[in-house]
Length: 315
Length: 176
Picture 1 (cartoon, rainbow over the protein chains, first blue to last red):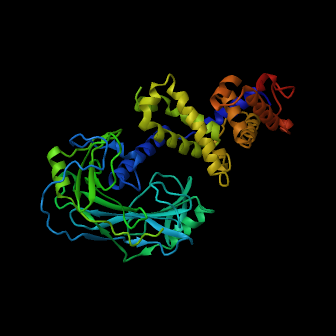
Picture 2 (cartoon, helix red, strand yellow; picture 1 turned 180 degrees about the vertical axis):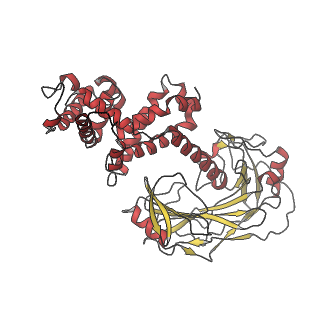
Picture 3 (cartoon, each protein chain N blue to C red; picture 1 turned 45 degrees about the vertical axis):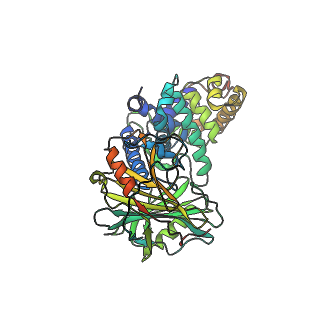
């Protein structure tokens, strides 16, 4: 055994490295997915920290003290009948001791057709948090990881993929149905639980009440909408409604979550509730169109809302 | 240097570096992807450092240690698939190939810290002090890891493979 032998061994190991193109492709896919997620699901539950990066929106500059609304337009809005969106699928089995703590639905803006959504269950007693705590299960419909990693598993009669990182992820797509993902984090056996939850998924008649609405969505953003609610444990919750273009390159969101310090925003207050239209700084991936100032004003003036339905949430 | 320029110039080397440390190309791929995804949004600050590559390499080591903790029950260093991927050119003497593959197996079986130290020493060519700086430990600790790793690698090394200069006489040449 000599030094050259060790160096030869390392050269051989180094020679097994995957191609850089493959990693670049995964990175690009990840940036795209991150962007999609941020645009569609940005808000309390998913992307609070990421909110400072994104599509620039032409808004009047207001900084700090986000509880003070920027505008309280004296506009008479017609009574709104809020949209009800199907959750499409739901797990029929979950580990004991979990309660539902996050819901989101995605739908087509023009037709209202449900496209998917996300749900998360946390251990009973978990405090309100924007981070998923250990012991949690999440289920999403209509999302894909699709990065070529993982090992094959069977979900019923469908071939799926299992990935294990700090969580276990099971992804599958029944024929003619949207893709689905179950992820389990921080349990005694993430993989076994993820597989069991995934194999229990069936169609559901459960729905989600979308308690924010925008009657006229600027055309460039009228592709998909996502509405999410993150219950805060006091009978209400943070709600966010996001709109994106069909190519996911452009988007904006309306939220009841106060903006970050230094973040630009417009706001409207009605019946003791405030909804914000945050402006976001140009980010690392920012080639979409932006709301004009006029569009921004129209959006904040026209948004209708009421307190979210959190009857499904438990603490 | 922009993030794209950095990727173009250094991604292949980073992948080889991570593969050598992890002894598993697929784990290395995951780790490099994770590290770069986290580095990208704050690239301005990282690029402002004198040597951004060193910063990213440190991130890779930290990420590897983190993944090892999280996946300890599931990950077996250097899978058989990975070993199979280390194919020998056909004109390579069979005995040399056998020695090298045996060495790969021995490296892969080393505990993580020992494996990192040995890789930094023999693949990266770093000194004890440079490795200590990178790992945030004392040079004496590096020497200790090196010594133990070499002892493990040397133990019962098949005599059929013994060739060239044997350094079983001491670790001074290679272990510091």
